[in-house]
Amino acid sequence: MVVESSTHRRSLATSRLLLGLSLFGLGLVGCSDHTIVGTRHKSPDTGVSDGTTPDDDTDPGLDDTSDTSDTSDTAEEEPVRFEGTLDLASGDWAGERIGELTAFQPKVDLAVADLDGDGAAEAIVGAPGWLDPGDHGAVYIAAGPLSGSGLLADELRIEGGDRIHYGGFTVDVGMPASADYPVLAAGSQLSVPDVFLIHGPITASDSFTTPDGWLHYTSTTGAAGYAGRDVSWVDHSEDTWLLSGDPLALDGRGAVRVHIGPFTGRLDQDGIGSIGGPTAGADDGPPGLSCHTATTDASGAPVVFAAAPGVDGQRGAVYRVPLTGDPSALPVELDDASADDRVQGTALGEMLGVFDDGWRCLLETGDITGDGIDDLVIGAPHADLEAGAAWVVDGAAPWGGGSVADSPALIARVPGDLPDTADTPGSCDGSCVGYGVGVGDWDADGVAELVVGRIRDFGAASLVWYGPVSGTLTPRLGEVGSPAVLIKGSGTEAQFGDGDGDGDPDLFLAEGAKQYDPDGTLLGQGGVWMIPGL
Image (cartoon, rainbow, N blue to C red; front, side):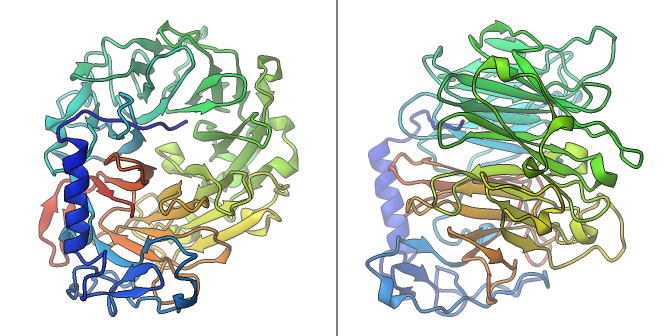
């Protein structure tokens, strides 16, 4: 479950005033430098909203030809929306870097949540490779209402310490009924404990060595475990659950464990039960179930989606696990899963739903069709020689058990456009479409937007399609099925929340890689950006 947050470095009134002035100055509220198509604001030629022409794109996979579809007849019906190209390196539109990392991060994770209940969200950035001598990791918290462009190292942060390595490997925020404020869960790798729980409000920097609650898994056989490899919350009709993924559990089958509150002190390591990964076949690697996400069905009961990247010749498979909310429904064994609750990757080595055996988890839920039921977005950056792909499947319809490409529940697909011709697996030298996925209702029309990230030298970008979506989409602008918005400079993490406290959803992007301009000049070490909603 995602909630939202902040500390007052600037008053809400001032933040709103400056936001309004910046939008007016950039032409998003009627500046003559821009064409208004219906109620959508758009540059007439390039889609760049400051009235200038951007430099030629050095990535041949990004085509800056804008969509010129006529929406003038629906001006009173459509919400206000961005369209065109935004370059984070140039500060186009109202996109602003709200925090910069101090060093290159091989992995980042992002949550957006109101940790102190003041109505403005914090940006919470997990940086497990924070480059101190021990790779202890850190979680940075940029406090809302959000503005400015300082170093994340100068913001609030939770640091690692002795016996803690890669803290902040994954982050999520939940609102248990037993807590007065939201609770931050931060997973780690190679740490003692494995998962750290920090209760809000968080008003000062601290250390992972003094958490309010923690999860420390100890195997009775002495086997290794990564019990903090992935964490998430789900708030359902009966309770709030904390889920933790461990790819080494059950002799490599992996497991997602379910924990209940109160979320203080040391939690029961086994929780109230688990979802056990499938058994490996003759041609499989370790299934490695760990990456997961969760939502609720129409009745309010929890539904867990989990990826096992090692099965089916490392095609990988994603499972849907409907639960009742009653602990008696656990444990669940995925060997018993129905075919209609399973899809697999399209080719050997695809590892559907993850990057690099679970280094990044690529499953997100949201109502992309507008039917009131959450759908599932699955990233597959290793597909097609790392050209990559992303898939949207119906959250409730039968999945069929075969390839995701042939699933009767398939709603939309985003194929990659640039394979890695050198065939160097794991390098992401192709377009790696699906390296990031996000879902959220940016324009507040009741239907979620689809965000798909791609990552490539001088070509990282986030692609945004306004919901509802269907059919075959393309990562290129100016073609049938093209994204409404192409955001250059970040293709890793995308989340939504109200970061400026004005009541409208904002889009947050986080990137750990170094940022360059088209000439190859280093602009920064990565960070987090917020693009305010309108």
